[in-house]
Length: 544
Image (cartoon, rainbow, N blue to C red):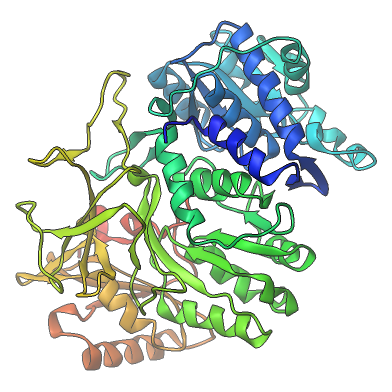
């Protein structure tokens, strides 16, 4: 299969027929309308001199325009440089310059503080508004979207309204690209080295992932089921699984520009949401709300969590609540990273094992390697290595001819991603994650894996979250444990109980010497726990 994502969507549309593809702000948009706007937008982009191989920045949250923009760029072979829409003005400027972007799609209500940066060189801006896809009589409630926090669209020197771009493009034709092996998207992540990286994925990468996910689904009538799109498109988990897969397989997507637990629960109640993806903190917040429970939970059947450590306790609590209302759906733990287009292992109804991150998806190979890049036998801990048709093209380093940077090529010519994550595989092929390689703590020559400590501590009913990191006492390394409490409790009593439980259930060198109780954990843009900020290793003033 060598199709662009746009071609893949067109092929899928012939199977699904027309249906309500997206629901946003109470208004439904048909797939046929999405496709017409994609075509018009692609033609407009071509008309302003942007062509195959060029780069355009997509600076949008989860809105309808995110769908049309990605596929329009993809149709004409333009690389979508997808950037977190709350990136600082200077960060956006640097990103645009590094990727050599030639235009930007931006949402009006978020755009005000970026006007100066974008006007500096007359950078072409296509300004989007939520009202573009809201049907009257809802529109009047969103008149504020015609302003950019007090600044009209004319504040931008070289700008055009999204709707005007569609109007211009509707009478023109685009120069189509049909090569799925070309770079489709730039995504920006931590990289397997820990440094900020720009990951290059092709259409074939994303389409292959969608095909693998389809094997986990069951046939259903297009438009009858909903997918709650919480994960952002600037991350592969959001782009490939929360957007591309549902749209091409008959789900009505409900994009949430910003996650809110109460709003998410309302969508579950109001619509037949069967497909739900998220990170652990999202599921935790939804479950903490009284509005989570109800008969609507029986609709859930495809529920996957990844992106961060997911405790078995949270999995069991979620599944218990679903079963309470007669639901057969279960929350499944998966694993992946942007470098392999997101998910590469997952638990399923057919194959599931407690505490594991599942088995490799079809046609993906996962192995556990030692430092010499040799495969380790079952049960031994090493680095997780992945190969398959979802492996990235490489890291972009300012030269669009760069390929295979960040890829290890073995003697047989196979391309592998070394994930920087540690784990082991059992004799049945289930993979178990033990932590980030750079998170591993060495105490008196022993390797200490944070996940082992966190799993034990989370067995205590009064613990909300737990994160084990590198600590120091009198300049000597030790395990530092940060926790949040889910019930009122004296701090000293909590610490004493944690220490006693750890001594009973952990090896001596794994027991935390420092325990810090916090109201909440710092988090990254993807809502992962920011362990770097918790670690003494990165906070010299705490190394006492």
